[in-house]
Image 1 (cartoon, one colour):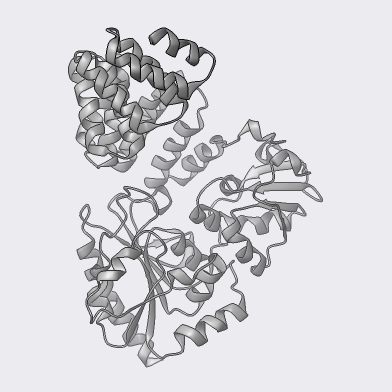
Image 2 (image 1 turned 90 degrees about the horizontal axis):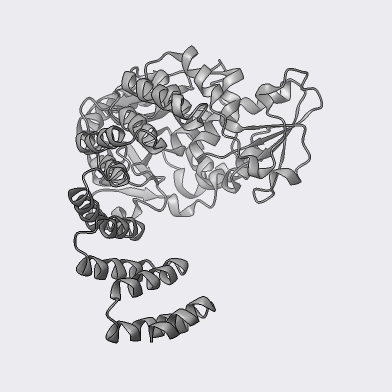
Length: 476
């Protein structure tokens, strides 16, 4: 049976090979070999459940083999089974305490569930065992950013740069640390060094290396980050235009209508068009435009809503005299500390006299809306939005946007609308570690957690400030 299975396997007749391998399991003694051969096929087919099954059988046959546990852990992680991923990796390091790769993966897992002490323990153990793994320097740097230990971020990243010179991710971690400390000059220098260039896309001359005139030069500007980054750094497109450049903008499709209504002097490049297919003289990713122009006084309104669409939203949802607040409480980022876990945290604000609450939430977080108390009145708009021009039309009709750190706060800030951004105790690098205002947006206020994971206190402060704001609003 086994010889027949191997022949089918060698001839790439995989279904037949699996059939005969499974038959061979009933009669052959060398089951470890058979399961390993089955794993080759299941891995080729990316059949995670069957891969896990094979490793579990191998664990039964060879319970002292740490690699079976490790590989099972990798596949449990692919499946999204966190509990069994942890168990598998812990068994791997129990059987093989010097298993560097397992320590790296455990460190990453603990970091994702915010158990930073255990994450640091495993990552430092991995570094002690073998300091040639890039992931150790990157993950420790990310960890220390999450714990706001900025000196450690810089120390571990610089140590990593000695082994991996000019690595963009390590340079960016240093930039993030400097931003959090408010050391802007140093931060921008490292920000410049972080060149997110994918050479496989056939990119041409990098704009930051160019020293000549931009007049009549075709500059390809492309977005390779999230929606919030694109909205934040879109402000710099005007500077290229002012220098005479012809800007070719390749940006996420949901932002295209918004760009067009905002009168940016750019030519839109289809998102699926490869860079080498676009005729251009220079190129740069959108976020890297921040380096030459930095944070400037151009923090005023630079996004304009389609007036017809804004009127349509007004007629349909906003034709009232209440103080209208749009809220976002949940990020699309998985396992991110910035989320408010329950929309009912806004209940007291919804009950304030003269306040009407609107949900701008999309996709994740919206199932919470199905179980609201009867007296929690919230108008959900998120399902109406086809792209960001719809979101902008809604925001245009609001008196205030109240949200966690998501693309919507960048949108509101870029539109010059009042926006209160609620931040975790250790925020994203762009918000620094202190202050209730930001140079990025003139109309934004920051409400920071004073204790980790405590949104209740933040929302209590928000409510107090809202009472003052609404009182002033009523006097107008």
